[in-house]
Image (tube, rainbow, N blue to C red; front, side, top):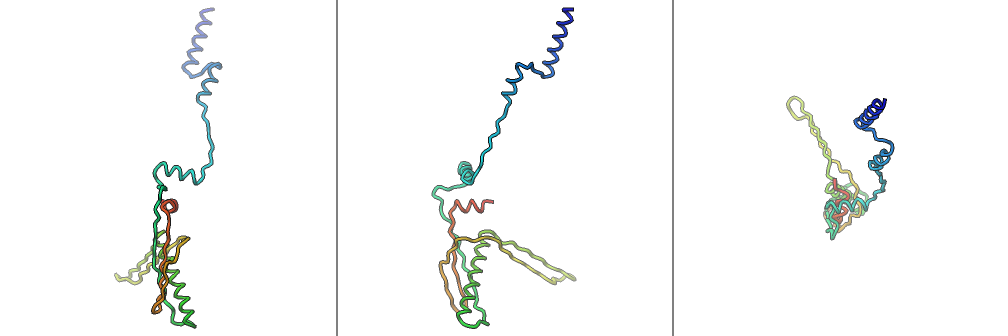
Length: 169
């Protein structure tokens, strides 16, 4: 009978050993070693900048300024009530043109084109250019009006840090 009990205990311990079971006294130490910790942390803009500095994706120390300059032109319409109205409308057109050019420099231009061919000849050709963007803090450096043409020189200064923050895509 003792042999039978010894063989039963031996077979049970071998079964537990090969099946991966651990006696209850050792199970708590095994679960403690495999326990993982989850850390929740809020990340703000400064944290992202710090990581970018460390990874050398952002150069902030003594960052030079980038200067973008454009010249917008506007023509005074012929059917105005007074010369003052012609001047004001030409200036408005020149400013709109300058902002459009600045947006094209910063954000690029979306071009859509369509050609229609009929009977092996070009029937219709259309090209549409579109600029979408936000221009802030642009300064007008020069204004001039001569021979019905209004010219506006505009420039936008932006630090290297700000440039990479906005346009790094």
